[in-house]
Image (cartoon, rainbow, N blue to C red; front, side, top):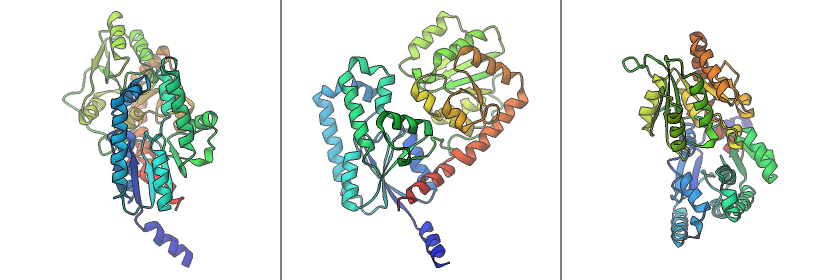
Length: 387
């Protein structure tokens, strides 16, 4: 009884986490993880300095920007600021590295060793794999090999590694030999203070609207979505809306124009509030259909966001998707090609009851497993296992 009482008291004590590194503070994963910890009653202090501005920024560095003295001056300034900030951190129970943290691990390990505190790294994505999928290996082979060596070394240092799917954990094991028991899973999820069901009446389209939003990259399979739009182009009651930007957008827009897909509309990025409105106006939403390793191993953020809004989502099948969801229960799952996407769209359009059921189930599944509250509970439990 005494031991149970002591454990109960300890579990209710405030945990203090230092979120550390040159991670991108505005990146969804970092914002969600910090919000989740706070929701779970964890006190979060941040020791962060901006180094990376975007994926494109890191791509530019990998393709030769690292040779520029301006880049190295930027690195020196960022880590000097980070070191100075680290002296005022104060006491904490656990240090967590945000994404990307491949180059922050080594400084964080020194600080944690001096303070005798555990180090946790939210790996989330392999920057080496991102470089490979963007075709950077051929043009800058030495830089990509360097990324791989650094990433392998970095993975050995933390006491605990966080990842979003077991399929990605398996990739790290096969690529770097990292034992799976060093990882704990925290799904990507979404911020349900922003992404939530809202009722649209006046601005709802009279046509059946299919929405895709996200970055225009190979990971998301935009060509397959356009192929589906072409297959369905004779159906005047259907319309497709694409929202976002990215390196492949100009080519995708040209392809839509060359095939006279008049029912397809492209918009740039909108604010999150406007995006939620667009999701609510859509009849159904699209996930990811690319065949890259990254696409097959992850559940994309957009899928969770649309689930949070109570919308039915069609997405391509993959081990990661099949491990978490059931076809025609929380999602509509199809093959990663235009014919299958078109068939899935017609199937849901022709079955309003199933469309509504999937949206309802998606929302409930999100609340139970992928909301800020659910993620915070899971993440905190993983951190408590180190204390």
